Image 1 (spheres, each protein chain N blue to C red):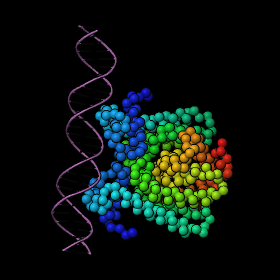
Image 2: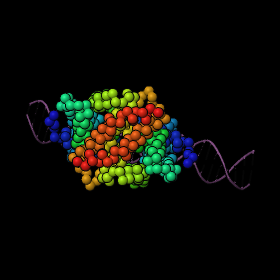
Image 3: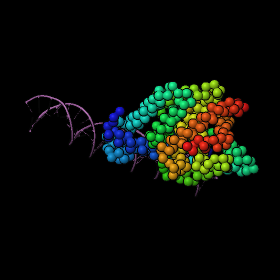
Image 4: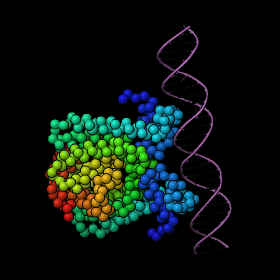
Amino acid sequence: MKQNPSKQKVMKAASSLFFLKGFHGTSVRDIAQKANMNVSSINYYFKSKQGLLEYTVTAYYEAYLKALEKTLNETETLAPIERLHALISTIIHYKQSNYQLTCFIQRELSLDSVFVREMAVTYLAKENYIIRETFYNVLEGRVKIDFKNYLLIQLKGMLVTPYILHNDWKDQVIGEYSHQLFVKRYVRVIQQWLDFIILNGMQTEKMLAQ
Amino acid sequence: MKQNPSKQKVMKAASSLFFLKGFHGTSVRDIAQKANMNVSSINYYFKSKQGLLEYTVTAYYEAYLKALEKTLNETETLAPIERLHALISTIIHYKQSNYQLTCFIQRELSLDSVFVREMAVTYLAKENYIIRETFYNVLEGRVKIDFKNYLLIQLKGMLVTPYILHNDWKDQVIGEYSHQLFVKRYVRVIQQWLDFIILNGMQTEKMLAQ
DNA sequence: ATTTGTCGAGCAAAAGATAAAGGATAACAA
DNA sequence: TTGTTATCCTTTATCTTTTGCTCGACAAAT
């Protein structure tokens, strides 16, 4: 996937601005200026502003899903819980190494547009499937079906929280903040929660049944 | 806080559209059309599009903080954990009863603008203070300081997750979905997590210290 | 009769997009 | 070497639509 350097330059500038101002809040002129590039060049490469968005987001998700599948393949022999741990680690690593795009996409995904719906069908469904199956394999027999949903959402929430509350986050973790350290610690926080879920599944379920 | 009905009509239409399309993705004409109202009237009432935004968001947060403080006052005599439970319940209730605005504001808060920074200083700081103090009172002596941060973020993440992953959410909870039931269940999921944190504080801390 | 609210028309700026012309580069033939 | 052609990229200038907002007229209410 070697890329045209100009194209890359535009995508980088766009990601940065989309992250700060949102898609509609960013003009093609802004992007052109930030990338030291001409407006027409951007339209030449990406056809339109929408095209730039689609190209960038698609590239993000293609690489993301590839990473998830790679992890699944490499952990086929491991126990379900180990596999889930590995998957979580991969997810957080990828998101962290594409920080701005992750935040931007997460935000934009909650909008209502044809593009978002297309992404949902093409990529989110797949991501959801992978996470769900891997997670449910761990829960197997420990928790009632209708309660699994809540736990799954809780897990997914943890996977996106740092990229939504990123303002809070930076305030809190200031000083010791670094990507590596963050990833290491946060992955462990999630895994800790997981272990709790597995051990206490039965009790939790009882409480909720009221 | 009795309001002008026209003003209310505009705010309702705006909330709905901002929720779907975002602030920059919504034009004043869209809002006017949805509210069966003239563009000029909107500018008459709110001075500008930005004014409409500020008015709406401010009203949201004023009522929100008022609700939080009311809960704090009403639970002064209770144990810290009970107090936190009550606070969480109030938060989720309020967010759920202003669903679209909650989703919209949560999304827009991650943008970079003077308005967001103003909101952060005026309201988010206060909200954060309330949640943090109430939460830390519960953790008192159970967990090391630098680990508290992670737990606080995790808690805050749970409080916003439903309003960020609302697409996933509706897919998952379909059928049994209703606001009351949701609130009841979700609050309990969080409280369950809390109980775990308190009981296992020491162990968790050890694991993370590595 | 004065304040308050509503409306249609329209302006000026911004934003998305395109057209057309001009390099640069490489392949190829004279 | 030199000239021709084709392709890819960049730039300048321009077009069109959208958007935020105002103005002045008119109506309603107090």
